[in-house]
Image (tube, rainbow, N blue to C red; front, side, top):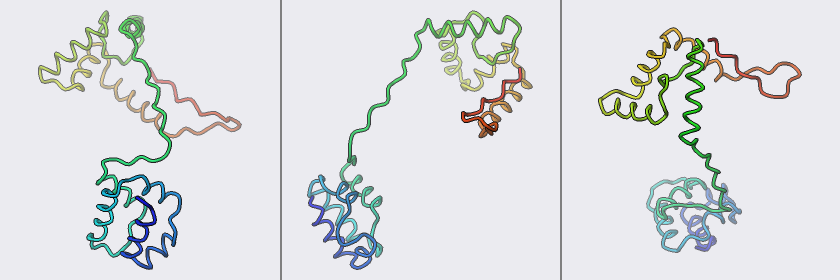
Length: 187
């Protein structure tokens, strides 16, 4: 639709408040929003405001929402690049990471993990699905697994305190330009 037709209709509906708040001529943002939509869609938009009963003129965002309602979707401007998908680790890579964690456990160090010693990624996923089918929640499954690995409620409390500490904004040391490192996990 021609922006001038839309602008004239809005001036007729809202009068001086439209001109005072938006000017006699549309700016570039208004042009980008209105131009390019078909006559039928924009006629519905104008009718919406004509029969809305609202004495105050709509802003750009409100008009955009109504256009989207009648059109289905609105996107103007250059297309945004699609974010690059991070590849999922292969089953072998996942198994290696799990083995590293379990080696850590067997050496006597505590590590928060829901994988049982010697369990592969696939076995873990199968056990998790089975537990969910049997009525357990994911949280209950993870909690049971943590307990089987020797993780105590006291360990979990320390972990949650540590995690909340690292989520807080960190102070930088004087003379440092980079971000501070989170505190080491206390186990």
